[in-house]
Length: 465
Image 1 (cartoon, one colour):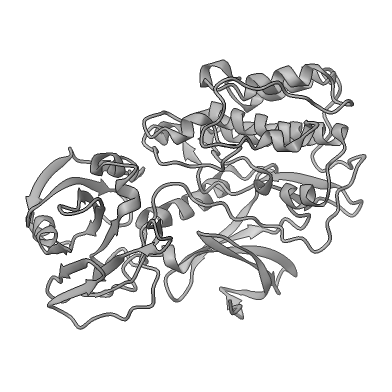
Image 2 (spheres, helix red, strand yellow):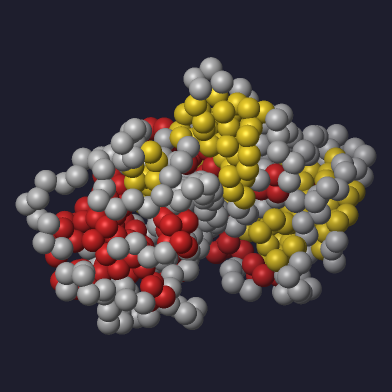
């Protein structure tokens, strides 16, 4: 990967981390003489409107909260190729994942650290936000003064959502071993108790005699919490707190991070002691020189974006990639190769394309109409067209009633969204391939002057082999 020389006003020094959905660079602000972390949406996701929404929502959310226990956002911007980026505070002390890779943290310090993480997540819960992916990689450390003090920060809220919208976010979101059981249930409502589960698993990882207890094997978490064996220098009552926090049923857990924090404080025998001030010196230091300190979390939900380097076809006529052929509306062209994040049984990315008057600019420019078309056998194996569309809600938009239309021998489920910002209308559609087990998905942003038949005409032009 070639490092850019600059992103916006920031000189780029080196790569900090690469994930499935974003890349993070270390930038330098010459005017302020300060380093920043710059998180850039991955190119192969840049055409997925919903992933772009979540990427920017995360930045807006952190900017709005502006709390010392949360990673801070300084600015957002857009690269010349249309990909959005967020400028974040640089957590120069590394991540908890980095430190655990070096060695176990002494139990008293680990217990204090768990308390600080609970306090940070409690900030999110007070503002009606569920994190959904509380793992060691999302706990960061930042220098807080010349005396070597540190702040503990909660990062990567790409999966976070306001509780008012949580019931509409039904896609799998989270990391195995830390993900609450209900997060793997498309019909479940995910609330603050899912974060309590993740915090409990984090506590087991930090405090158990065998850290592997925090990562149970098998496809499903156990319905009955196993006995937790903590290290000898951990107060025995802490085990009961972690057992309750990781209960299979949400109703059996603590209601939120603040309640879990209170229970941990009581169980550890620190109730009544003044809490350490933010940034205060800790008795134990976990310095990891040269660590990559910004971790990327995969954004939940189903992605959609052609990741290949196919060139745009001439305007008009048809365009074919793999088993997909589309009739291009007048003035439109197409490009595409694969559906990022979707893989078939052979491990190869599944096919997709984007069509628009300017297909490479479509996702970045809300003024452009266009459409994404993708075909996925792996998605058909886990979801119906209706269930798949339920995963692709748009939180800032109002959906119309679902309708069904039959075009060119294919039965399409269609949901239209009216939006107050950005694109005025987004159409989500899905169908089953008529000849084999695969789901075809089409996301459309119609032209502003299009008639009511535009969507059905476009769907009629999607041909499947």
